[in-house]
Image 1 (cartoon, rainbow, N blue to C red):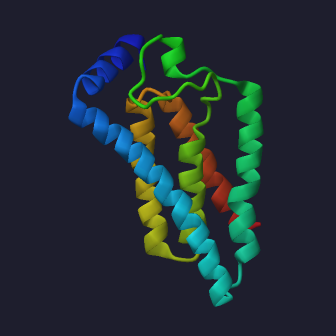
Image 2 (cartoon, rainbow, N blue to C red):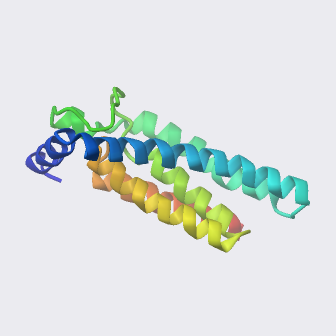
Length: 163
């Protein structure tokens, strides 16, 4: 996305109390929802004795750590750093934009949950799409960051459950 597109988009959102509240609220609610759903899902697997608990923990966990290390080393700047504008989502982090860890997490968790429970997995995947849009319009990620996060999350989940 070009600088003019980001500035125009974020100015419109920041200029509207309702739009800004919607973007920020979606970011917070979706993030918290998935980080609550995942431990509940793991607890449900444990309580019910469903086979696959170790995989359900390792498949998202190992790639999350590797992705975090990669982001630290690659250290790609965020849109608000590159284009010098106030983001909609209040974020002060410098770098570590590529790939989006929020989007990665949602998609790897979506694939993991889907392998056990189809409908909740699809719901989380849909929420991941919304999160990707929110992180871009919120000015904290470039489209390539969220696309990479989604692709790596899906691939990590699929490969993890194939192994």
